[in-house]
Image (cartoon, rainbow, N blue to C red; front, side, top):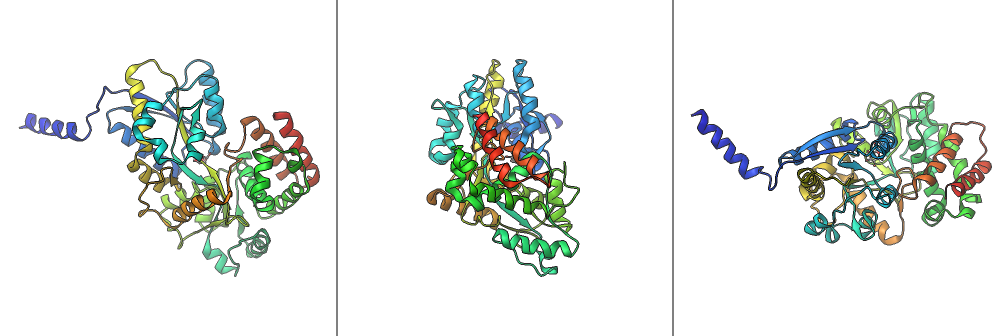
Length: 417
Ligand code: GAL
């Protein structure tokens, strides 16, 4: 009887889970360790394991991925890279150019990636015409997360411009709440900076400065204004912000300690994991002055060259799973982002995701879809590092001068070109 049951169980397994090839292992480097992020990556682990392969988790904590990238470089240089890694934007080109990455063209062809993912995304995933990365999602960075109960209590309205933000911030501060939850880490400083820059510069000059690295815009009068406004924002952050993780800042908004946070929509993953409902417990609105603009951050995975045939199969299975509509739905519901496929049924997504999808499409048409500086989308890691240095030291120095900062920014970027 027992034997019969086992056979029965095995035959069920063979129907739903039997792998088409032999089982392999993938070791995956990522930095998704917060509540919402961990829930999201768990979906991928599960779907890979259902196909008979095994997942070796290589998580390196630290939002924005700086620590993960440092660890990855050490492993790669010593000739022992993992099989897959979360690498995105310009870094994809840098790693591919060094000859580390394997081509995913066969998987991409089979999955029809060119047909279901917009070219604006696929272009970044390709190197020399070959797919070397698979996109996971599209995050919008210019979001303001709002605790509506605090705003109601202090009689402040949801800010739509920087001036309105300062007015609301004063009321919130006077009532004893933290107006803006923030973590003082370079990538988080840069996240706030880029939303202020987009609002003050407009999309065209934002692109000139941070994509084309145009010295006249980087050192120009409008950039001086960007730094002046950015400095003002600092007045609304609490003294304990240095070093704070982004998800700890999000929890301050969730718990009613802080009124707002400027953060990409991975923050929504934290609200969701805490059981909070968009539009009721919290609001998602565009950061002040950027309602018709979209700063994008596309997550992706790359795959390193391997020799073991089974592990190569596991890599391909992982790449195919990432684009699979079923994974795209569950993962993005947990992660707070929108699917990278344009043919998805969005009926399970909340208002924030629907707004994000609508803004993504509209801004692509109106030339207001711009790449994130903080998340490696707009320029090389060298120029990004130079921008981070200037932005962070300015933000943390109460005496820093906006005019000098703009000049320093141009100089630092030039040296990194
Ligand atoms: C970003 C990444 C997001 C999010 C965030 C915080 O770089 O693209 O998916 O996880 O870091 O960890």
